[in-house]
Image (tube, rainbow, N blue to C red; front, side, top):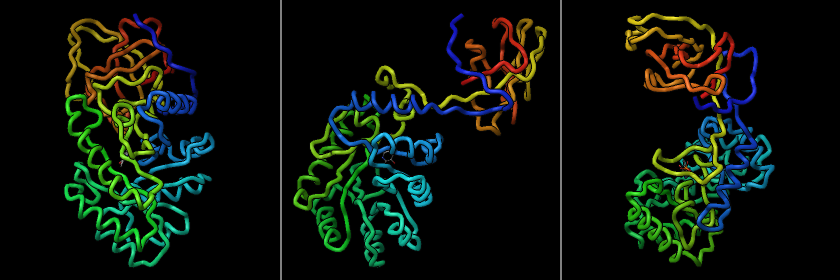
Length: 338
Ligand SMILES: *Cc1c(COP(=O)(O)O)cnc(C)c1O
């Protein structure tokens, strides 16, 4: 049986995650080595750094020379600023108009989502630093680039009234090898727009996410907004990541009970698993209330002592059962990881 490395044992907790900052640093290094063009890195730390802890991750990366950070909202931006990050912090989306004044206080860059939003920002009269979002196909936020004349006009108009220092767009299928054309066209639109407004001298121009930065090129983009691959995960299951990129997070728990069951027994709620033979079953005190997807009932697996153990039966609220029939020497409080 194949055996995997599960790491050190931690006592006294039922279910926990571990974040490897050295792994994070290594992923960043490998990503830069494999990026298609030389660009600055903007670490995307939105949604609590994809669940990895935005404060710890941002502080760590800031201390290692990352100068750009992206978040999804003003509360995230403030908390990242408050741990001592000195670089640019860009809010990729909406900030309520009533809170725009806080951006100035914390020196946070706001995305202009639309012409209407830019007008609202201008109305405050505050010296807010902004970047214009442009829409090249995602249809989420930004000025629609289908009409480049109009887009250019709006950017020129607002660059006279607002403190705009950047422009960006977002790729929506850069992780798919089957829709290369769409991504190439998105980047072409972005580059055309950047060329038209090059006299405005925006220092920051960016269109690449994790996948885009690995597999595409832009003449004008000078920052890669690096999210998911920084955390060691694939943008799409079909992707192959550069050698050496690994998940930063591991999720661990312990064995709370080991028991024998007989052929014909069923396991768990709904009796969705029937034992065709006598089996040894371990119970793990982690379930869907802890965030473990119930959809992985009878599908997922955990590692115990480095061996794979399949989940059997429906995942419960705070517990799950796994098959340890073929795994030697499983005992109470053996650590599991996923
Ligand atoms: C989430 C997000 C990213 C990061 O994308 P990844 O695929 O995780 O690298 C970059 N840019 C924008 C605008 C985003 O919303």
